[in-house]
Length: 461
Ligand SMILES: [Zn+2]
Image (tube, rainbow, N blue to C red; front, side):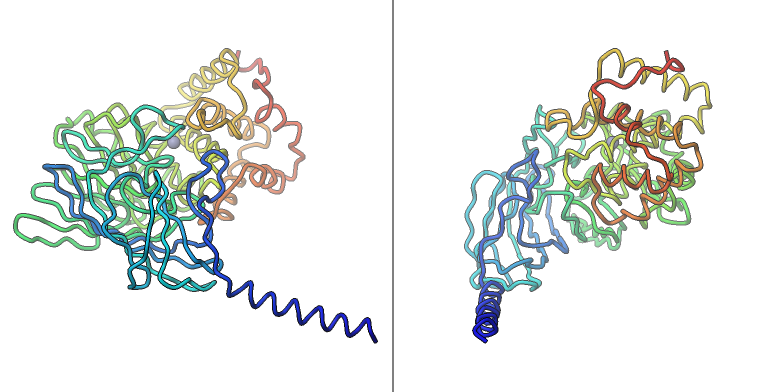
């Protein structure tokens, strides 16, 4: 009897404390928990949508902007955190009511007038302005990443942590969201962005371009290209819109690779399964952007990246990196190794076996000679290193050799099916390879993926 009573009393206490826990609002975490970037992103909410309205002054480089962010509280929130680098915040409203906020470096803490209850959707309206500058990033060094103002216009390439250079966000691939970009700029400048161009308004001296991606997107994959472009509109693979924005100064030779975009996507569909988005295209700058980036549906290409191998690499990212996000930046090889292998597959198909053999032989020798380390968890300074790209690509080539073409492409296609719209990490991919192939691959991965140096292979010497 006493026993039963005490259980009843215990349950009553438990029920009471659960009720309190639900109602109790606390600050959202100021980090999403990526070990490479201790303060990056935030916790306590899930972003659903970014609605970004920007007026861009091409003379001064300044923007006047309002970001409306729709999110859902994962627990009761007394305050929450966004990332924003530089720029001046004029005011913040949460659900239409003025909110207090504080800033410390990239961290923007917002205290709503009333706490937000667990599970509730809420709107955050941030009015901000200033001249955006690239954000420092220990994975890249140099001048940083994000918004770049160049002589010919503005280009945005934000991997890994540059999205916060131009809009307040939960700046991590683990929290993708829908977007809309409404960008107003003086003539003759043209605005390119991710997704579909859904509206274009002419105000006389200025124009407003409205772009909308149809699928959720990680903040670092959001891009704008603003320049006096030559715009080429075509019907792309499977009849989807294909829009290519060429810098006017590019000649026919520099543009030639982009004529292959449809063929490349159709080829990659044979390898990886259906193209995951509703549009495709390119922003082709005649500027040094430090490379090209797989900005979703519309990669941005800097000087020296106009070859078909690079275009195939960026388009392969639409499956690996864009549709499937890395769970943490230490899993980067699941993006870059796969995109590099997509490029290799294109080379094999378009340039022949001999070119492909030469490519892999060179890769093997470099990996052995330079003792290039294992791809997973390379450390933040090596996120963009040969460990991730070249050895990641080698791992996939060896996997194909180990399980055969049929199982290999089955592995890739079912991986995309299982993981599109989700995040991925290395152990999940390894388990997936064993599931699909039906083979024990522990020893195989211990060598090619995890050993300090790739195993010797006489076929490539
Ligand atoms: Zn890449």
